[in-house]
Length: 236
Image 1 (cartoon, helix red, strand yellow):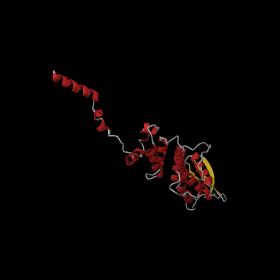
Image 2 (cartoon, rainbow, N blue to C red):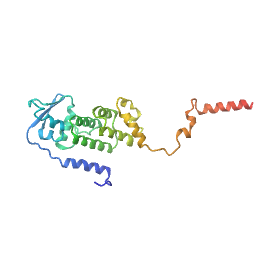
Image 3 (cartoon, rainbow, N blue to C red):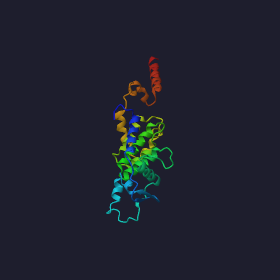
């Protein structure tokens, strides 16, 4: 694909290509998966198509009792339902058909991390970038915390959050105004060197050169007044 292709078109083409080359195999047996307190049934050929976790879970040495569902009881049913829909359609949609949120996408990526599904994680990255390119919103502190608590240090999803802040953040972002919620994560530690690396050098003089008096303890006016008084006393 040519580098001259507009970014919006390039992302759309990547997503469309992924959807076009996937035709799910809906023949054969289904597999029961317990997620939270809810049981899902997904075709074996589908659920093992891209997840290394489910490929291993279906091996005889791992699954000794075929009457019991695969146990993902600690996961979120809504998130797994979205994953199941993606398995069949290669489209990331919400269970209510509303617009997918950054928090939704963060939960999906963390699920993809746990079930070792690289294709799904890439699809979530595409959806996250698409969400950002639509404008009007940005990832919340909750989104960043979900990702940082559920991914390893070298995660591409973490890097994407850093890049959103480095290249797109403005003072109006709530997470910029009050980053206290992020103190419990490594996000700010990873963000700082990237800001230094990519920041634009100001054209004007630095403030300590242009206005050194702004750093005086009592302010420039007090110092000026004091100097004036001293000069008056000497003159007297």
